[in-house]
Length: 235
Image 1 (cartoon, rainbow, N blue to C red):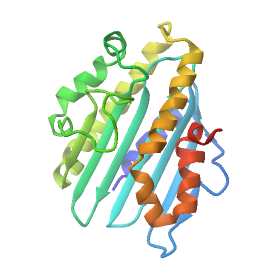
Image 2: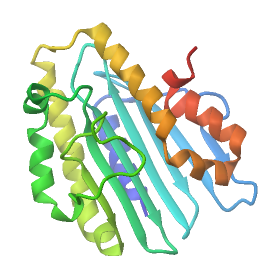
Image 3: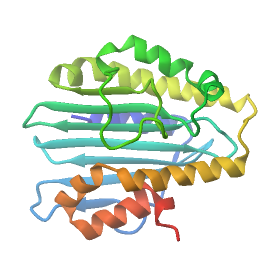
């Protein structure tokens, strides 16, 4: 279901000068013991970003997942980009989270960086549900204008494709604007905040249990700390 989204994301990254980077050994691809699911991941070097990761889980009709996080270079203080799409086929259930993930929570920062996401939140009412995400504190590393949905096939087939395209376009526009605007957060503080994001996210990541059920605890623990949120594995 999410292959067109994956293709669009990789095409955008490539068009922006992105080149593949090496994924930690053993984490680029894994097949479940039963052979019913496969997870593949990519790491990209993209100008203006220190790290851009992408993961695609294909478990056939039962489950589809697409996840991506973009970490800007430390010289930029604009938000991270977060994408998390899950489709549970048996229940015909979509969970979608698209957000500019803020480094800090204050009005000046939101005024500086969130006009584009605010506009998307108004443009796609099917994806601005007010239901709170269950695993995360919405006041840390998430914005009030994220595109968030617990829906069904209708949202997956009609609302999500144009919202995803518009979301990527808005994030690229945010990054382009930031190139010409001096950061207000020092680079060493941006580094600390991005590392804290990894630690925070690794402690709460709801997908970890899902990955464990498909690929085992040992592999999933390594994947969590070495690929998804590598700063969380640093001593």
